[in-house]
Image (cartoon, rainbow, N blue to C red):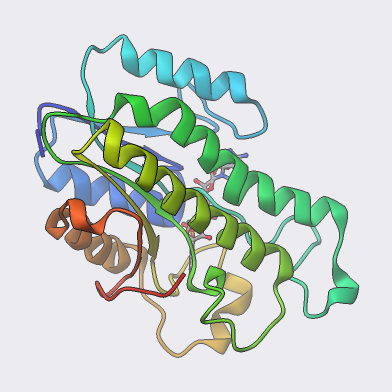
Length: 230
Ligand SMILES: NC(=O)c1ccc[n+]([C@@H]2O[C@H](COP(=O)([O-])OP(=O)(O)OC[C@H]3O[C@@H](n4cnc5c(N)ncnc54)[C@H](OP(=O)(O)O)[C@@H]3O)[C@@H](O)[C@H]2O)c1
């Protein structure tokens, strides 16, 4: 990876995003940008024009992107919690999950994939979740989150196929960070034995990004480097 290039973390204010930005800084990148709803420029999935403006801001730097790390996501929102049964399915909550977990990342692909380095290895990584795996769904529930992350996984697979022709250096992957201590996971932590701190998860995720080559594009990685089924 060309460290003179840009590394960008979208959702750099989140628990995992912030820790990932720190780990990327340690790799020696000259410029690591954290872009989110409160940064300058700001970027909010509610409004595509903010994504356009953020991409224009990057273009003006006349540098390509070596790492685009998407750390955005939602699991619970206002008074809504993930659905235990189909009876809890709610338009507003499902819409929010699809907007933040799938449509937003799709728009990141649209506006940032053309800016990825096409001379040396570049990586577009997005934080998905193991519960988005259809094969791995053994417990049911969490309709909106599961379905929106499954949609995100499909987007990553699809862009990886298109970009194999358009940019042979660009690698597109989905990542499961593990269960990580954050506001997003807080209501559910008691159910899990292994909870990582964001810094630990970020180290594991960056290890994957450093080690992969083109053959990784279109794959879904667990935090420990193993491959998850779609
Ligand atoms: N924590 C876990 O145990 C766990 C497990 C599996 C998967 N994941 C996935 O990992 C990712 C990050 O999780 P986290 O635990 O770090 O959560 P977090 O601390 O709640 O961070 C969520 C991030 O999403 C951003 N975001 C929310 N709404 C947005 C919008 N409308 N436009 C742009 N950005 C928006 C937030 O930015 P603002 O602060 O600016 O709103 C924040 O940076 C998520 O995709 C999550 O599904 C987490």
